[in-house]
Each structure stands twice: as C-alpha cells, then as structure tokens.
Amino acid sequence: MSGAASEFVVRTAAGAVRGGREAGVGVFRGIPYAEAPVGALRFAAPRAVRGWDGVRAAVAYGPPPPQGGHFGMDALARDAVGDDWLTVNVWSPEPGPGAGLPVMVWIQGGAYVIGMSGLPEYDGGRLAREGGVVVVTFNYRVGLEGFGQFEGVPANRGLLDQVAALEWVRDNIRAFGGDPDRVTVFGQSAGGGSVAALLAMPRAAGLFGRAVAQSVQGTFFSPELAADIATACAAELGLRPTVADLSTVAPVRFSAASDAVGAKMAQWADRWGRPAQRSIPFSPVVDGDTLPVTPWQALADGAGRDVELLVGHTRNEQRLFTALAGLLGEVTQEQAAAALDVFAPGEGGPRGYLDGFPTATPDDLYELVQSDYLFRMPSLHLAEAQTAAGGRAHVYELTWPAPGMGGALGACHGLDVPLVFGNLDRGQPAMLIGEGPPPEAEELSARMRAAWTAFATQGDPGWPAYDAEQRLVRLFDTRPTVTAYPEETSRRIWQDHVIPVLPLNN
Image (cartoon, rainbow, N blue to C red):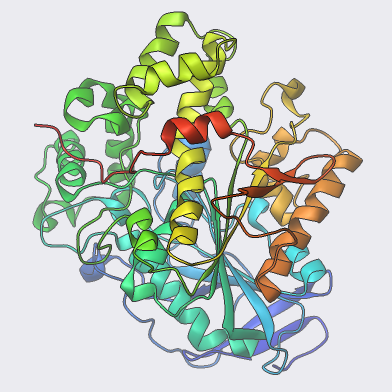
C-alpha cells in the first residue's frame, strides 16, 4: 500500500488499483474480479480477469448486471456505462498487507431478479470503521443472465460468480488489510439463500469459515422447473431457450421478458407450483453438479460442520410484501384460506395454523404462513440441520417494530439490512426506519453490528449456540433478550417438513 493521505494504491494479482479515504477508511470500488460476461462469454461460467498495466482507478462502483424492473432497478442498470458487471468493492480500516483483519463478504438479495452492490444501503464504511473489519461487496449476475436454465450453459451462473468473488478475496484481500483465513460471508433474502447454497457447494468449500444467513429464501428449483420457466421467458421474445437463439439478445430485452413472465406466473400455477403463486421466476438450481443437494440436506449430511453459522429472520417477514400488493389490512377469509392451502406444509398444515393460532385474523394467517414458508422456517431449519450434524449455529430473530411508514410494517423483511450496515438514513430500506433515525434505532443497529463483527472476529455473536433442547435465540428489540425460540407454534407445524427441491408438475 502506498500513496498520499487521501488515496491508497494496492497491488492485486491482476494489477494495481487506486482507492481513496472516506471517514478514515480506505475505500476501493469497481475492481473487476472476472471478465465481463458478454460476447463470447455470455452465459459462461466466470473467467479470471486479465491483468492490466499501470494503476487502475477504483473510485466508482462498476456497472450493475442487467436488472428486473422492481424498485426501479432496471433504470439504474440501463443508465450505467459499460459491461464490467462482475466487480468487487472493499472498505478497509487499515489497507495494507500487515493488518490481518477479519473479512466480511456481503451478498445482497433481490429474489435472484434484482441486486447490485452500489446501492447506498450497502455502503460498508461504518461497519468496517466501527467493527474493525474489512468489508467486501460485489455484483453477481441475476435473472436470466445468472439463473436462467438454458441448453448448453452451466447452471447457477450467479452462484458461480459468487464463488469467483470469494476466490478473488482469497487471493487478494491480504493486500487490503484482510486475513484470507478469517472470511465470513453474510447475506440477506436471496443473499441469505445464496449463503445457504454456498454451504452446500463443493466449489465453495474452504473459501470462508463463517457464514451469516439472514432471512434465508427457501426456494430451490429442479432443473426441469428452471428450464420450463426459462422456456417461457424465451417465448416472450419469440425464441427458443438455447445459447444460439439467446446470446445475441440485448440484456435489457431479457430482463423485460422475465419481468413479463413474473407478472403473469399465476397462470402457470398448476405447472410451476408455489413459486408461481409467489411470482418467483428464478432460484438456485439443484443440478447435481454445481449444487448437488439442497442446503438443508447438505448441512444434515455434515457439509457445514466446520463452518460456524449465524442465522435468523425478522418476525413479520411477509408484511412488506402484503403492503406492496395493497392488501395490508384487506386480506379476506378466502384469501387467507387459499394461502394456507398453498403454503402450509402437508395435509394437516392448514388445520395446524387454524388450531395453533385460534384468535388470528385473516391478515394474521396470511402473514404467518407466507412468512414461515418463504423465510422463517427455511432459516430455522438451516440452524437445526447444522446442529443435528454436530455443527454450531447461533440463531436470532429481529422483533423490533420499525417506526417508519406509520409503523404499519412491524419487523418486516429487509429491516435488518440498514441495521446491520448502520446506514439508517440512506437507501430505500431507510424508509422503514423513518425520518431522522430515532435513538432506539441507533442503539439497536449498534448492537447488531457489534454481534455481526464479533461473530466474524471470533465466532461468537454474544449469546449461546442453538440446540435442540433449549432452542435459545437472541431477540433484537429495544431491549435485547435471550429466550427459547418464540415462534414455537410455527416450529411445531413445520418440524417434520423437509424443504424440497421444487419440481415441475406435469
């Protein structure tokens, strides 16, 4: 590391990069970790980046990969310049080879349809500065580019991008002040599902020693289901789902086609099952190669026994989605009954909810069963599979009701992101916290950041590990407590359910 007080020059395996100093932290943005996956490399596994001469400026985020249209992400991608989609960003309190700091590598969510590391909510400066860790964020391919199942191309290209980013960390992070032997991956929603997938992927073994999975998205597709959805997306363009047909299609048209299919997925509900009911067109594919089995099966078989795990969810995961659909406070008895029929586990699942929550309103039941199906039980079962195989897991639940937007959303999906990063006043998730973050939000954020960085540093977030007898978890609220897992009724309803590979129904 060299340079003036306002800039740092670091030499990576591919060449030198120049970053800057922001609030006492060295910051490097937009460093390529793989070649641009365009042209002849479109739909290919990531390829090692070629070296460069001289010093490359690393002061701006790289262009995001093509995006779906949710939350305006497609416009952000369209306005970006260039096709170097696969880049990393680094925040380091001590950007030099001797510091040996713990490393935290973030994988953002977005239902595998959207997601880019340059959003303000993912700025790693505060987490790095106050936690004494090196923070890394990166882009990976989403949507059809990253998860479309086509003839003649590798499955799970988005996951392979994540492995390539972790390999870049292994090979380069020491020069930025990080310790490649103390790497923690952490991610939320589809990012949490990605963390779970990495635990099950032989190609990711040894690239990280700790993992934080926040609100794990529990959808994993069979190759047949993924291919059928990709066929429908190609048909929107009048094409077949082959490399020859699709490789010349502009990425923006690709994203529009998958958005069109996502918007009308319910018409394929008989064929595609639950993902169609939730408009989830993409998920990791259990292909027997890149991803041999589901994360829950892999952990039950001991794949994560040597990886320390921190996993949890929010209390009201579904409420944000209900609000976005315009159904908050409007769910009918028929809609609640339909949700129970679709998402509750097994034949007795709907009756389990009705008996287990006798005073629940239709809104309550609609929220509970979908929170459990998509995020809460996949997260809990990940911990249970880990501990059953002799590994260690710490479990949490975020129960603090967010005051933003009139306080209507409770501890909803995504609330953990600004709290973990400490970015309470920027980015879309900050709307959940409201104008001028209240002191209790700052205090809660400080506790969560301290727990996450302590876990990354020494493997202990500050409360006992989860076990099948006591089931102790940390509740994050205005007053932190440790208690038996509080969603006991849901746990019992789902305790015998095996989270499946989602099939194509003929």
